Length: 209
Image 1 (spheres, rainbow, N blue to C red):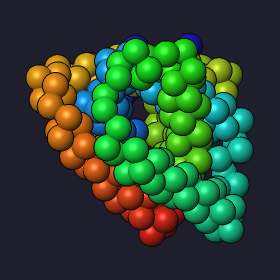
Image 2 (cartoon, rainbow, N blue to C red):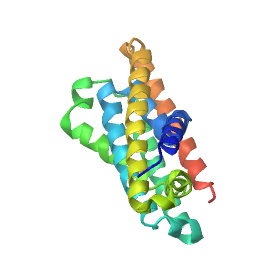
Image 3 (cartoon, one colour):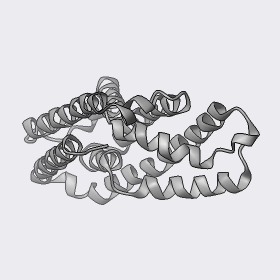
Image 4 (cartoon, rainbow, N blue to C red):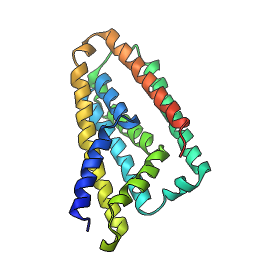
């Protein structure tokens, strides 16, 4: 059982952390701006599914591997950076294609966005280490079943992520809805998306534990 005081602090802290600009919420924002609210939501669900993996890893100690092994950390880090650069290349390659919401919201496209969000999240070892460092601060050992407490906290964090990221994606879509009626704006937004993703990929590649 998690103490209420810890629970309230955790919820407040999670909300603030979800708002802090990072690879995940920036990517959701660009999906909302360049595609649709539905695309941003599906991307959010993909990212959140990745958080389930990180939560489980932290709860059962697997994240310790990335914290103690520089080789394991670097391997996953470079895979993650390469994937971000690949997504950036795709955005730049198709920058001149007109916006077609019937295609962007098709089941096939939405599945791709979900998978992209999931892979993007699980290939970031810093999230595993963050969960390993963040979740235990709100666990009370005396209350027993530490893994269950950490999983509960992880699920709360995931819920907060879905709520906050969905709002971020919807806001991005609202702000850009009028601009997206102009084809040239779509082109420049795709270029901006690719630039942001390249920056995030390089930042991840140059990061350390």
